[in-house]
Image 1: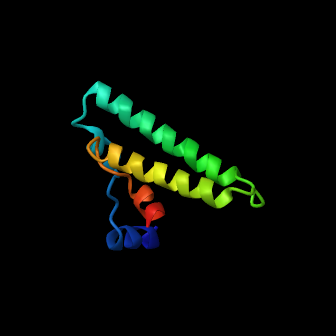
Image 2: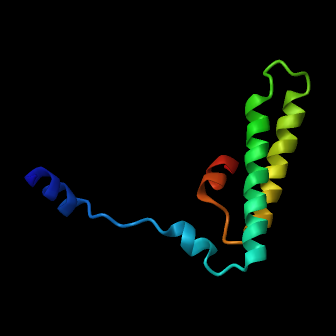
Length: 91
């Protein structure tokens, strides 16, 4: 018990409400558009993941999909910002 309290003293708990803050000022239509863009990004990520390694046009398809992701990042920026995970994948 003492170890647990000591740990909490060194590492206080802060609830993570970042998702609510990012989309709090958006209208219902903007939230729906943001959700559609998030789903589109997820679909592109899945297509990248299942793309066969020996596919003859793999590099062309990967480049096009990465360009699509960059375009989605530009579209989602005014709708609550670009998710941090997207930024790490783009760099």
